[in-house]
Length: 150
Image (cartoon, rainbow, N blue to C red):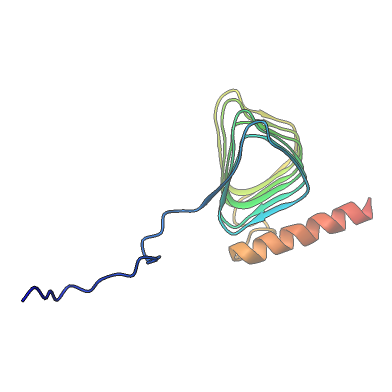
């Protein structure tokens, strides 16, 4: 009598997932490496490498003392280390980068401070033709080689 032909989804249906974002809040301090398959937003302080298969967002209150390796990055805070981004890097007006930058695309707002070298574009061996995972792994290996040569 009250039958419907509509298919019912189970309670734990994951087909409509919202994007996952890892957050490190202001006032939080972390020592060590961070690795994530999803986006990361950092508002606190990090001493160590941040490796992300998605996008890293560095808030204006953030201070990262270590390397950033990701697909995309949006920096408003302080980064003392190398930034390696396989796609697009945005440096906001309050950004302060003290290290080298490797990226395919770069957007810099007036007022951003950069003290380091650039390697850009599709001709860069670090970025050319690599998948996100390969880029991240190769970047980590290359960083280790540079450290061990010193």
